[in-house]
Amino acid sequence: MLPLIADRVSYIVDGKAIIEDVSFSIRGAGLTVLLGPNGAGKSSLLKLCHGLLPPSSGSVRWGEADVADVRQKQAMVFQRPVLLRRSAAENVDHVLKLRGAPAAERARVIEQSLAWAGLADIADMPARKLSGGEQQSLTIARAWALNPEVLLLDEPTANLDPGATRRVEDLIRSFAAAGKKVIMATHNIAQAQRMADEVLFLNHGRLLEQAPAERFMNGPSNPLAARFIAGELVE
Amino acid sequence: MNEFSNALRTAVQLLVEMDPDLVEIVLLSLRVSLSAVILAAVFALPLGALVALTRFPGKRSVVILMNAMMSLPPVVVGLVIYLLLSHTGPFGLTGLLFTPTAMIIAQCVLVFPIIAALTRQTVFDLHEEYDEYLRSVGAGTRQKIATLLWDGRARLSTAILAGFGRAIAEVGAVIIVGGNILHSTRVMTTTIALETSKGDLAMALGLGIILVMIAVVVNTAVVTIGGGASQRTV
Image 1 (cartoon, rainbow over the protein chains, first blue to last red):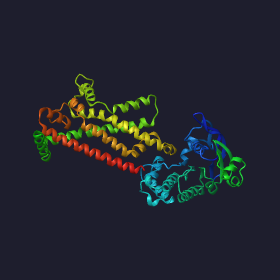
Image 2: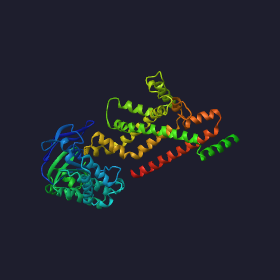
Image 3: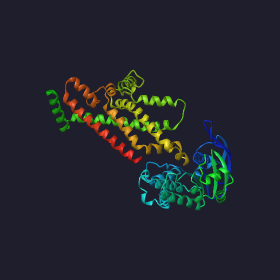
Image 4: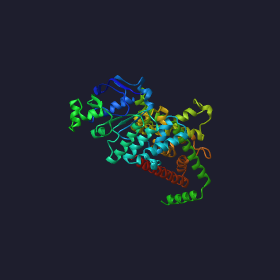
């Protein structure tokens, strides 16, 4: 499906540019992090890449394909877990049913996905009664069940404590380790350091730098990015 | 006071002895109102959901109209159905006037907007939350509606119960289109209206007690389901 190519993408709401003239291409496998302070436009950019938002101008393409055609081969995890008012297992079942998977296969995939995310014990619990970490693990298990080529995550651990964050990060890593492309938005520099193979640094809706993670963390060429990494409050 | 206590004693006696006339009336009431509610729900649930999910010109007016129709006066509904079904009316040949079917139609018309409007609101609220997920996983309109109706089941059951409460308690529509014919179209509310005016208070009071009991049961169910739902949504 790669490369992901954004060509002069803007996203404008009520005359205000949320994303402004952003161009990039993401070619390599592994984990790409969209990094930047809150309000940088990371979340909107992810949704533009997933086709949940239409660009006001410019285009987003995955390989030769249009966004809408490849959404079924992607999965997205949101900052606040969107879970149905059903059991954990039924939440996974829901996406499998939408894809038209036969019942026997669904049962097998549900069991595998929940076990993969360490949720086998709570399969029958109402999803919305689970802890925050379990809920986010469940949305990632649900994404795993779809066997997507690309996983998009929007600040998946922003509301989680360190223990839950670690578990969710491990799940995300095993996604990447399984050869899937992972693109994650975060404002957390430490998390980007722990996880990223590649960094796209955004601020005020503009892409300021794209670099391999190691090079970016050791000395970004953009002065604002340098200040951000140094722990300064960037506005 | 003496008259009241006598009537009450006889009423309780009718209830305890399961008086055949009383039982017949209660069963017909339940049959008419339950049929009306089920029929209304079958169409109102998907329609309410569809209105919530789709955009079309004039949607605002449709929503306002749906909400306004929740408080349709039963006598007006009865009158309109009467005119439609009377033998000079457009559906006169069906011969449905003064039958339980006519009563079901009238109550269905009364209940339909209640269920449709409450469904629209429920599905709209839930959709705010589910929208990005449903689009992300590629759900079509039909699948979205099925998902949202099922996940709104707690609030929707209370909407349906509210509809049932309205149907079972109304007298204006069924008395006009049913005619309150003994052993045919006589239901609890029409009997109470008739027997009170005739002075037979025992029967009226007995049915009144049953109606109040049904109201209590329905509202208990609403509170129970509602309470469970709010816990589940935390």
